[in-house]
Image (cartoon, rainbow, N blue to C red; front, side):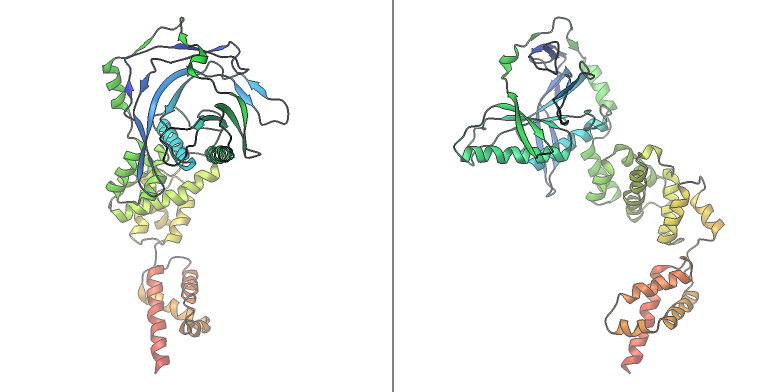
Length: 423
């Protein structure tokens, strides 16, 4: 992210009284955070990119969790009190709820890629507090901000920010003023409500933490860690597009999970005859069948039973037209519970796709003779009957016929029928 890492950072005590902090102070960093500056790049919906600045990243201990979702008084869960965390403070560069969600998703993906967070917002592994302010068009000065808490999902972040923006605008247009305060998002009512007045930095009476020594890191250690970092998401997305020729959409789906992108690349490397067409076929299989199975089983790619090498073999059998796409899907389902190689199953089960034109012409004639009305319908412009006839031939061949060749033969046969009718 381009942050500057301090060679020496110190801890401070942040003093305030609130039910989620029984001891009355929080160990944090104030004047000397662990790093500062830098930015995170996000991709906007129109395909352009934007950088959101990072003010600072500091370490601190967690406070308790206030539970507001019950129909009783608020409860306090102190199980996470004292657990260390990092807080990322962003520059006021975000201009809409949509941008806020994109930024939060980029941060989550980044943290998961480097392996320091599982990104689970519902369980509190990743949390977000949002500062919101509005200003009139053409003015430079930011308006008074409110801090919105209890944002436990991307959807709630977007909903809460949209509501708070509308609330502040309506209040100002009525001649009111915005109070600097902390507000809580209530997902059930779709509104924010006041929690407490928002303090300024001097209200916390920061002073150096006497029980902890400063954290010192050497330049050599920083470079060693930097060298071990994985390729970051957006850089990997661009490389996948360039190296494998897949669309931006595909690359975006694949890099959403680092392990999924690894699986894609391992499968591509296992292809005997690599080509952009086969890379795209690999991508299609992962985005459809593989992700479907992972979703149904509520698991991740690490537990997926079909190794990249076997998926690559399945892709090549389909690309070479040794098997049809229908047979490929049947084979995929069998590979889920079998350690066999796809080529061995194809040979054993006689699944090889039939491309014998003479044999397929016989099946085409059978389909037309059993459904003579389809010829008249086709002449009348009802081209959908072509798909029906292809399906009939596939049925006769038990799914082994080459569907592209069947379609070509049918078009030729129906074309001859048109010519005869014209005479």
